[in-house]
Length: 126
Image 1 (cartoon, rainbow, N blue to C red):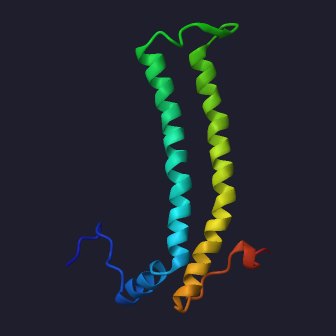
Image 2: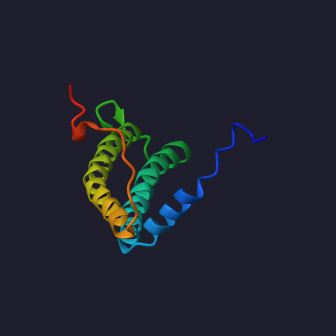
């Protein structure tokens, strides 16, 4: 008897298909491209959050007034929102290229693709 909380192991066919896709040059390019974006973007985002937390919580650097009654902590915290929006926009643009690379990796692998449910792009509109 298996633990219901434990995910089922993939079928041998699924493992074979995954191995075929991951062995393609397009998949290698996909992983490299995604990592070249994701690692610096994550470091920038987390770094900005941590910088504000450390500077405001452990130093008096941001205690002064920046604009009227607003402190530098408030201003820098507010600037994190446009940073996150920028990173999300860049991610969205690059994700379209990553989708193309993923499709190319599947095509290069020579495996048959299974039929999937229709999506909005394929005419599910009513």
